[in-house]
Structures are given as structure tokens and as C-alpha cells.
Length: 339
Image (cartoon, rainbow, N blue to C red; front, side, top):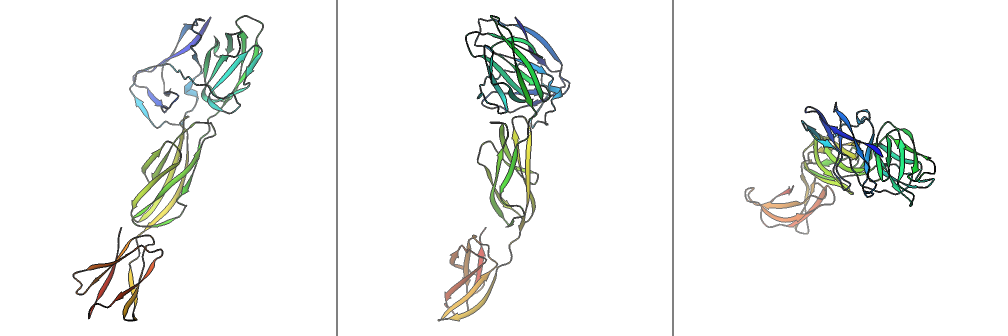
């Protein structure tokens, strides 16, 4: 019993696109003019705990979105082994398992994204089963990586002990980009310099467990890359100006979804003191142009040289009233806003 396994060796000047490492294992996808050769391997029924992944289709025809990591001048021999069992449901995934019993396949049809893998396992004692399709024939347990365009791909299964073949279908779906929405700050928000705020986003992917991370950008600078929910970070000390904030969500298929907003950071207005008057023998005045939530210190001086702090406040609005006893013939006041 013979089946085919892909042996892929790259030329010296080929470009490579790498997927992300995660708990499933590392994936590396070839792009460019990599030379591809085929080798044969003899299936040995004694090793029933081993599963071989057969490649079906040409990865160069998939149309992968440009990866974030490029490795050049690498010569490497690739075998794609991914050991994962997922729930037997019609949900689209990157890896799915079909359990083969006599005249029964569960699930059928089975759905995967382009570049994903389907594994066939024995579901009863009549295995191993011969799985035959456009990739050739192999016996369970084994799998196929579907590097093919979206569509329906028929196959048959037949028990090693005979009894006739029965058919199933693999439905390959094009990978879908994740979605991301910036939740904070709001579009066209205005901040006072130096601006600090929470930058957060909601992100999701239609393929279960396929979302990998969310990047946070302020202009052309990536300020953070968050790999699990909640997707948020902190931006600090922005000077006056107009900024584009962008969140980029990546999935395991190296596709990206983006969302962007615009914010404005303005210089604080000058603080003014006015409304000076006497009331009950005390000096009363107001400070205006304050930044709500920012610490302010009231200082006094008798000679405009030596200043003494007399009161510290964190106003809830842009103005604040002060009342101070008269301590000398002349007294000067100023308010210092702390950054």
C-alpha cells in the first residue's frame, strides 16, 4: 500500500513566508519558485498511531496574504505534521478530523479553509480504511493538506477487509480576514497635551481559534502587539497634533483586518486668574483654563521671586475658585499645572 508525501526543498535564493508558532506547532509556507519533488513512503500497518499528512495542490496557487516575517536564503526540508483533533461539526476550521466507520463518515461533508488539513481516523474495528481522492490513496490514520482553490472535493473510503467503497466530500473555503473595531478612544476625540489614554479594540475571526494578535499603531509607530484578549494598551505623552490610530488584527492564515480613527491633541489653553475680590477679610479669585483631572498647585509670593505652595487641587472642570487669608500688604498668586 503506497501513498505520497511531499518533500519540499527550496533553492538558495527562494523567499519564504513563515506562519506563526502556536500551541499546535510551527507552520512554514513556501512562496516563490521553490522546487518541489515527490517521494514515496511505504505505509506499515504496524504503526497505527502514526498519521501522515499528504499534500494536495500547489501552495503557489493559494494566494496567501503577504506574511509579516520573511526569511531569505534558507535551505530547509519541510514536512508538515500537525497533530490536532477538532470537534466534529460543520464549522470551518484549519484542521478537521473525519471518523470513518463502515459505510459512515462523521462529519460529512467536512469543511476546512484553503491550506487547512483534514485527518481521517478509524471509527470502528473494520479499519484501516483506504481514503482515495485527487491526492491518491492512503490508509487510515492519515491526512491531506488542501492547498487548493475553494470548492468541493470528493473522495471515497473503503475498509481494508472489502465491502465496497462509500463517498464523502471535503469543502474548501477561502480564508476570511478577521474583523477589528477600535472601542477607545472614539473617532475625532480631542485630548490636551501631553495626552495619555487607553487604546483598545474588539477583534474576532470567523474561523474558530484562528485569531492570533492585534497590533496597535499611532501614526507609523506600532506601540504594542497584544496576543490575547482583552486587546488594549496605553498611549502616553502625545504632543499636540493630529494622529491616526490603527488597530490591525491578524489570523493564522496571515490575513489582516484593520480599523482606524483620527484623534487630535491640542496644547493646553493658558491659565488665567481673575475675579479677584475681598470677602469676609479673605482674598477670593478664580483660576480658568485648567485641565480637568490634572493636578494644580496654587503658589503665593510677596516679591515675585520666592514662591511658596499653599494649596494643591485636582479640578473636575476647567475652572476653580480659591479663598485665602490676607497675609501681608501685598501678595501675589499663581497656579502651576503639573504634567
